[in-house]
Length: 261
Image (tube, rainbow, N blue to C red):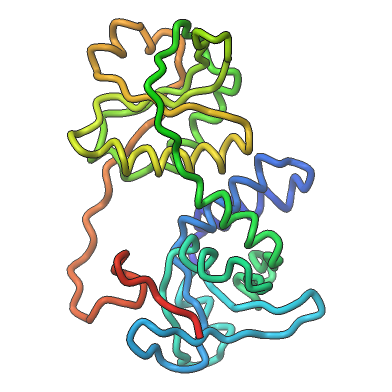
């Protein structure tokens, strides 16, 4: 039996707590971050993909699996597929009226993500940070400290770009109060990518409520005493990938995204 994945665990939590919005958002975040095996009608032709589309009572769905083993078990033999991040698949399907059938054939982890949910997630993943120069005039503990753990998972691997993060509540000069993710010690030139990743993570973790992304140096964080009241957001470093001996898969080059036919 395949080892339980982060996506499996999030699925179990979502099914066990159907009214818990945080559990649903965690599942969709895991889905967006996971590498999925997209079932194809034929082998990829360059960057052109022809995903298998099935008609179910609930609508049209492409079929994706979070492991080659689950794909093989469903197909009962070798089949053409493309390994793509869930966020890429969702982005390609947005607006087409097609959902995602995930791990069909697996009783414990099968899930139908309707087309409306695909469009919703694609919109969240497209969240763009709004640049601003305002600095808070007041700092306090976060209203939802438990969100720091989900943000740590959402931003895992970014420790190479910054020293860490803090979830806080901030008050601005105009009396606006908001949650904020403070990125500590960002590397030179990394603020743009970090702001985009943070905006996406905040949208998936906190929902549509307004949240700020702030960049402070380690000295500024220490002077504010964030460690005394803020919830730490851990930015881990990425694990070095194994050497590749085959040509890169469709979608692996961000400058040449795959195309669905």
